Amino acid sequence: MTNFELAQLNIARMVAPLESPEMSEFVDNLGPINALAEQSPGYIWRLQTEEGDATALQPFGDDWLVNMSVWADVKSLKNFVYRSAHIEIMRRRREWFVKIAEAYTVLWWVPKGHIPTIEEAKQRLDQLRVAGPGSEAFSFRNVYPVPESHQAIAEADC
Image 1 (cartoon, rainbow, N blue to C red):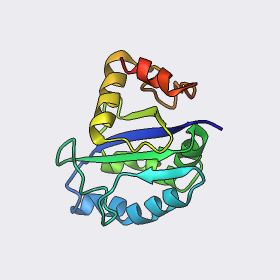
Image 2 (image 1 turned 120 degrees about the horizontal axis):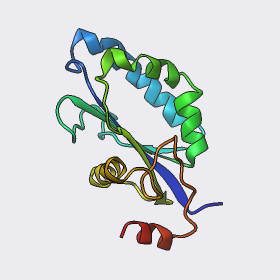
Image 3 (image 1 turned 180 degrees about the vertical axis):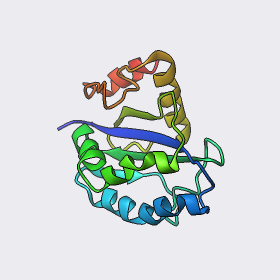
Image 4 (image 1 turned 135 degrees about the horizontal axis):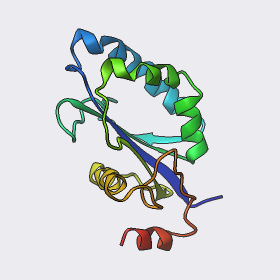
């Protein structure tokens, strides 16, 4: 049993405003996909307003969507992302989102029970973009193991 959970952030720049016809199929799938995530083994938390709307939160700008969540471990998140109905939406992402050349997804370990902030997530994404994958900011391609202690996270953040 570990004292850490996996936080993730991914951002996407929309090809058109959320209310536009171009985005309607994506918007229609948000509720079912979010419900699927929330029912998935290992799901802990996701960023959303009190009304359950993550699209209303636009910390990267008006034409950007943000998804941030916490999972029990990498396997749980990976199963949801790549082995559920979520994969069908991912396969269609080019219909709704602009291709981004730099990293748009970041993973990092947080102490169990910690809810990451948007600022924390932005810092982790910037760190991944600047320094590449490491124990404090990584991707599915370069997963770093769970830290052995809270001290390991504090030292990595220095």
